[in-house]
Amino acid sequence: MEARQTNILLALLFIGVLMGAVDIAIIGPALPAIQADFDMTGRQLSVLFNAYVLCQMIGAQLLAKISDRVGLRAVYVFSIGCFALGSLLLSFAPDIYTLYTGRSIQGFGAGGIFPVAAAVIAARLPMERRGPALGILGSVWGIAFLIGPILGGIFLRFSWQWLFLVNLPIAALLMIGAFRLLPTERPQRNTPFDLAGTVMLVIGITALVVGINQVDTNAVLASVFSWQVLPLLLLFAVLAPLFWKREQLAADPIIRPGLFDSRQISTACAVAGGAGAMQSAGVFLPTLIVAAIGITEADAALLLLPGVIMSTVASPVVGRLINVVGTRLLVLTSLVLVTSSFLLLGRGELTLPIIIAANMINGLGSAGLVGAPLRFIMLAEARPEERGSSQGLLSVCTSLGRLVGAAAVGAVAASKGGGIAGYQSAFAGMAFLAVTLFVVAALLKSRAAEQLVSDALPASASA
Image (tube, rainbow, N blue to C red):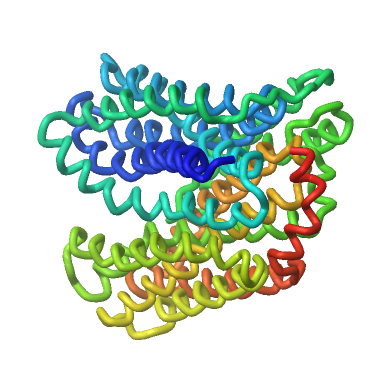
């Protein structure tokens, strides 16, 4: 593939992922304006936010799997189209139910963008170029949270609808570019689509997400055994083994159980779930900063910028280092950094320099946990015909980790009475989780990227 065409392709993928990531970053500033326009309660705002999260998780696995069956270009265009349609509905919504519908469609489309983008990189780039390309995609999230508030401040001067309308011309250009540049190969699949597995997966994820979001972190046990939560968690507990049994029997399963025969894939999924949980702890950091040094919430949010900048800068570097030191060392080093940051926050004296240093260390470590290394492992280990679904699986693991982690941090903080002591206990718990993940990640193969390239040459050639 020509260098110029490759660069254009990477730019296309980068902008697509950035569009979805920025939308997550700017929804926060838009919520007060949306609430005022529709006279929404706090509960209704929560539904609006969670609809996106839920549908994104479903879209990540389902659209990624469909891309393995019908081709990457068709699903990427469809994902961008869904995102644009959701944006359009949000912009002209006459009532809150249209808002819910638009946000759900938008989330479903966003779920397919990143996994398909990663699968395109595997299909179009040789192994030695995948790490740097995935590193560039990984930097998108940091960039999104840097420019998201700025865009929010600009467009909210006119109306909150412009935050979503701006997606429409971008989506149109992305769809045109995708038709020209993305691979057109369509796998030959004669096996029936796993409809039963899909239904179980959707119902199970919905039950788990809604159930976790109903948990009151101030009274965890009481809320877990309430009628709003317990039936949903029980439904998930019943469906999980049934889904697993179904996937073992399906001709073309949504998630092939054999994927987990690979120690690399099983370990990567476990680390991704834990990384998501630790990432969710950052949501509570401004609360801890406000309580610890007595500044405003706006100033506390600004103190997160050094960590975001560090993660943004480090992600492409981590991607390039895959070709030098391999994925195992990068993941282990990242976990050491994240452990150090949580220990500073959970056990250290919370002064301004300590908080900034911990945030920067965490940002540096996060670049190796939610960026290129784990996705590289999945691409190297999965069969060429299931690259999309493997990337979707990793996204779902990370999202589930975020949900459980956010609930856990809130519960621990509440059990300690909240305030500084409560949140420090929660961050100390995250440090323990990071140490546990270090032990798990030590199971990764200690192969350098050059060995991965030679091992994967037949798979790459067949792609």
